[in-house]
Length: 287
Image (cartoon, rainbow, N blue to C red; front, side, top):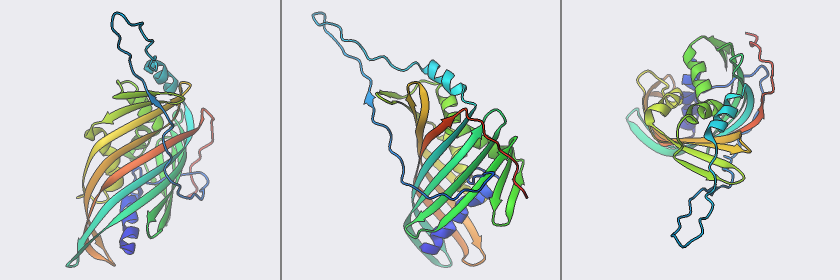
């Protein structure tokens, strides 16, 4: 399966190279190393104490002021972040009269800067396939919502609005702006406050399509979407996005021939915000 694991990375990144989210960009390409997924900060679940007429009423822990949290997130104009993604899948490949399957894990480390005032960004990412260790580095720059993706042949320019729309919407700040307008499914308080939202399939599928729809006839389905938003002293510090995904892709590779690749697994991405409202320069790459 080693050669197929490498092919899988190519398949996953193909959609990005066509002008979608899978890649990253930077005015200066950075070398990165995949890291293990971060864990959520320790929290305690908020609860209410019930009483009888003879009991003294216990104080109920105050929940977070969601409107205040939304106001704070809406004030984020620029931010830098680090995200760690784990994609664990069972991959079945059928073609050339044979079939085989194996477990494949992808680790994606991403570092980026996003500017909601100028609609500009740079993102660098490194994808490592386990257990074979195949590694792929990608970069992307967005300037005024025009996306530049670095490929083997150099920088490719695309004005497809889908690429940038997905970027802003599914960033941790974009997700917080969207979901803080709704009632969370659960709230945990402590040193860090964690708000959890269950995401309907149709709202998470556009992101999954970017990574898994590597060809026009790819079918993608998602379920169990879950978003966590983490706050410390009323400030957004990170979060986690996870969902289950399955896809089927037909590939016609000059070396390996015609194949059908079926994937079934889970995506889990942890975000950490490194800085807020620190303006940085983003320039178009030299092509």
